[in-house]
Length: 405
Image (tube, one colour):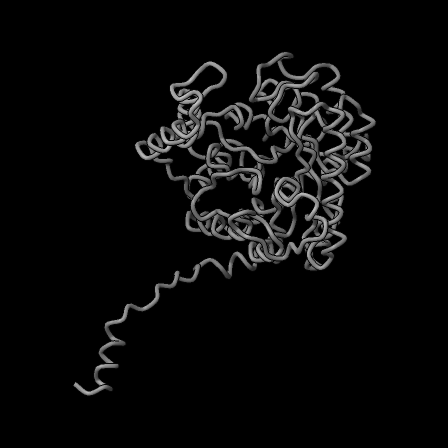
């Protein structure tokens, strides 16, 4: 066999590289997101930068970051078609509340730093009209979400100061019950909101800030919905009927959200998407405690290497359940079924969680979720509502309440 025939045969036998098929919905998605900004209700990038990069975050290049470390950077925000972003300024609910205020101011400063350093990418906005204008100009309209009522230290004056600095919503609690509101993930003390908690809701209405009910107990949800004059948001929550954690929203509350005119922005965190993943996570936590719970408990107490090996053995025997884009879309569909198409949005929780669904590993992946919904028969109009029109409507309504307030 001559050398030319051998080379030709070699080419025929060499496997061709496998390329993903082009998304058949890409053109539709691009057209929709050109007209309507894709708005994410919750991204924890400022806190992730503070935790991992420390003081380097003020000067480091944030154009492209290691995707194994961060879910977010500016190149990937562009690739994902993001047109609006609520940046969470979360601090630990376990800190003294005075320290929470200080750390919140630091996080707000980071968001302002992002806008000052990268004006070609983001613009700080306060209103729905300003967000639309930023999107039209090719910028990501950026807002600030304060993720926990403890971060106001029981002071409406602090809340007003946050508003002056650009805060667009307050999450009434985070993981801990506070003096005026019950959390979804702590023991209740007030059966919802106290009279001061109700006053906080009224002050949010007066200021034109959104009342965010992610993380709060169902009683707190119901109290806030009773008191507020403006539509509420859930900045990053899912349907409890599909994943039975109190961090999600029950069908009864979804009906009230529809009556209120609010919006539930669907979370990508695996433990709030998949019931199997939620149960696995609880079992894994129990296994960790079973193996090593200083100072007195655990089968491998005093032997951290033995405890780590025991956990690895358990994880091999009980692998983590896979969570998918389709399951996230199921939550969106369920919210639409219960509350209506006008009451659903997107609130990824990127850079605030560990496990994410396959195919939703970073801010570049929103089109994959929209494509899944298109595959299910969603219209362009409904995709636009989910992507941004619903939350823009809620923002505008809150502004009207503040003006009339």
